Amino acid sequence: MLKCSGLSKSFEKELFSDLDLELEPGEILAITGPSGCGKTTLLRCICGLDKPDTGTVFLNDQNIGSQDTEMRGIGMIFQQPVLFPHLSVEGNLRLGDKNGDIESALKEVGLENFEQRNVTSLSGGEGQRVALARALLAKPKVLLLDEPFSSLDEDLAMKLVSDVRSILKQRGCPAILVTHNRIVAEKFADSVISM
Picture 1 (cartoon, rainbow, N blue to C red):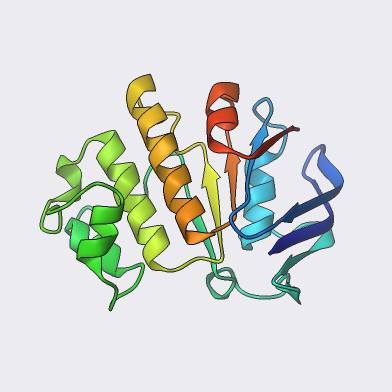
Picture 2: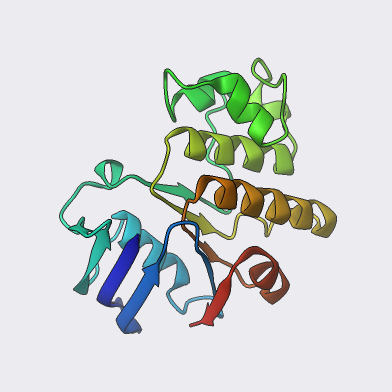
């Protein structure tokens, strides 16, 4: 279970103040709002890439606020997939779990037999699926998604929204999606909040 209590963050202006969130296992939340309102910053505070000005982040009743990002057990998928071009698809997936079942991970995201593909040859949707497979191989306790469907054409985005939601529900993995797209938010999440 993820619980954020009293989170606040300001840069030149206040982005959010005294924000509380709670996610049960398998629960999916979408956060919508205009550019610059703090959606991505909130995700960065939860996973440890940014430090909130106030508040605490708990994961399974443990305060993880002082833990390094890589120790928190939180996966993050960005708008553009972060893949390493000098590595094959398998090489990129090994970064998630060097001993993981690559074949099963690719099958789960609909990319069977992609192990030896060069990541520079992948379409946008395939790249996002590889990024998702890598994040899931690391067995995250929570998955954060920052606009991962926005650069894809509408049909592909909706297919990926449906597939990713199914995977998260099967695994019981709680997730937070940040998006500008209200239709995507409502299709992907159990609940939607606006910032």
